[in-house]
Image (cartoon, rainbow, N blue to C red; front, side, top):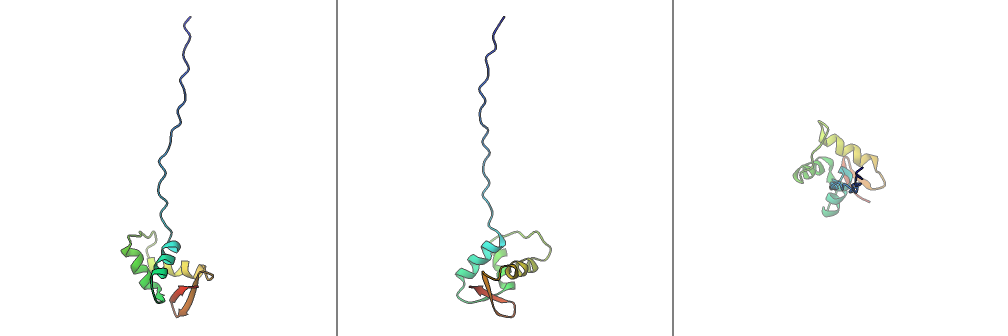
Length: 85
């Protein structure tokens, strides 16, 4: 009888995808670079310029919701205008 050789198992490595920054992370970066507080519509325009692709039909609403969800990070200066704390 013939002995069969066992094949060595090789590890299959998956390529790690670069994690895309979130709306919150990009908004923080935009406000850091800005010298003055920005309206949420201006923030949305800058996100679009950077190439962020929104999943909702209304991207401005997405930005507005994220900003209001984190009051410890974003401070309201005027109606619908925000800066970093």
